[in-house]
Image (cartoon, rainbow, N blue to C red; front, side, top):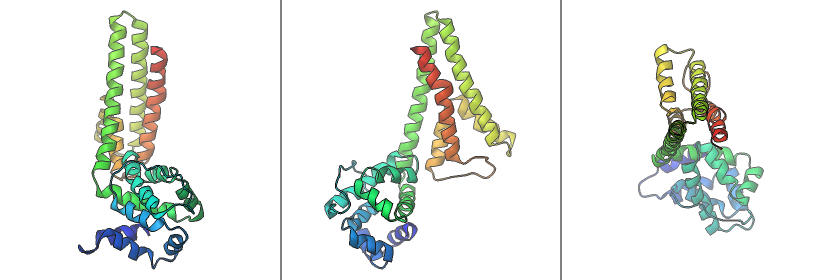
Length: 254
């Protein structure tokens, strides 16, 4: 249903508005029509979702029975910011649903609702470039900031003559790099040496998380020849960075 809805809005006639397309789409669908009749906010909410205009997150605490059409409009508009700040469409929809009591009830009662909205979210993320650019930019900034602060701290320890702290900090950085390169080798063991070297370079310069985030944000789930999918690799890399570098580094500095 999500795929069909987005296809209808994309291939609509120029004279038709997205709102009219959504209304015409909901009516003949038995499951969506039932949901729309039960909760009056659904139609306008779906219309706002499809419009995909970036606004601030709304504060709506009404339950599904008490939610008015105008509030449904605010709830629908809130999905855009959730998709923009989440790593994947599925996690953006998940965050969006748990922001509102009404959506939580709809999610419990209609098992098709979440998968449909995830598909809609996936298409919306693919149609606009700002969401991908925002996520990748945030990842790049975080990685550079982390690398710069580590270098600054190492230089401070060295300048003050605290060689033991300097050595421990360097050891943490090297351990993190070593484990991540090992993971890169395991991930690309079925591919060429050139590929392994190419994937190892971002690890050495501190940009591996940015590369992985860009792949996940672009919607590529799994590349041929890789042992793990891109989201799993991104999660593993961040976990290694956390436990081999970040947490020990904080302990050393304290």
